[in-house]
Amino acid sequence: MPMKVLTITPWYPSEKDSMSGLFVRNFVDETAQKGAIQTIFSGTRFFDILKAIFHYSKKRNRPDVIHLHVVTKQGLLPLFLNRFFNVPYIITEHWAGYFHENGFYKHLANRPLVGWIYKSFTKKVFSKAAIVTAVSQMLIARLKELGLVRDAVVLYNIVPSFFAKSEAVSTPEGDTEFINVTCFSNKAKNLTGIIDAIKIIKDKHFRFTFVGDGEDMDMVVKYAHSQGVYNKVRFTGVLEPTQVAQLMNKASCLVMNSNYETACVVLQEALAVGLPIISTPVGIAPEFKEQIETIEVNNPESLAKAMAQFIDKPKDHYQGLDDFKQVPAKLYSMYETLLSSR
Image (cartoon, rainbow, N blue to C red):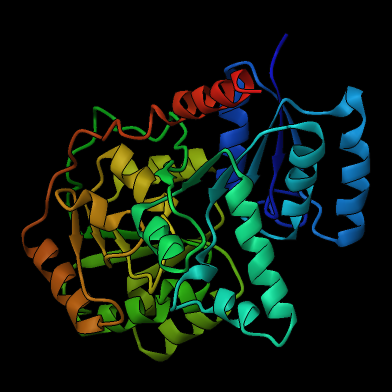
């Protein structure tokens, strides 16, 4: 019989937010193609979680394996099913809140009384997982530093197969085309820092394209106007993933100026395409030093220097990396291992 997998996640694409948790949907879609019957639970209210506990406790609804993306209060569901029905679960952690620069885990953990409950619950969910994974070595190191895990393995985000190098692509002629693909959260992505770097080198021949949408988009657009560089930039809004892949194949270089990232799916997509990259040393960037030129965090001068050097001496697209193609098979193998151990 096909394996029944229950995916639990606080983030998943919906009509209200089509971009939320796209990376989780990739996990679901790819493992479903390998034969898993996937069910999604993304309710975040306690009442919804309690209803789900009742629903999935019934024998006909009970999953074979649970995949929990991000340890939140939703962890109650796999804890309960594991404790009373021996349903194993795997965790894949994506949350940036563990990092100092974000600080949200520290905020939650330091609250009087409820902070102790939160920390204890989080540790419990991690400790009862059959397998703990995270989307970068940097995130695993932080989880260990916080004492939340002892052992964990990297499970990179899944990159759809259409993110691949087009054989017809070489370095574009004319102006250098930099791109940034973002959810427009300035706290994390430091987009105003990119505008500051563009201002420093605005007399050079280049264009900069921002792809995406989010809470700070209007602010960034206004900031570009105020800094006198709006003629150097364009904002596409949200594009379909296939359109992003096409744009990466046509662009000269990806620029990521983030203050922190747990992985940065965009870096993975660019690596799969073979697009040259300039990035701060966040997420998976330190794991791919040969392909990614790193710059200092929150330093417009460092970014401007790297961009100027690229304009003067551009790099060609290279053969896209295959590192992420095996992730679906690796994950499905984990599911099979958990199922056989029951």
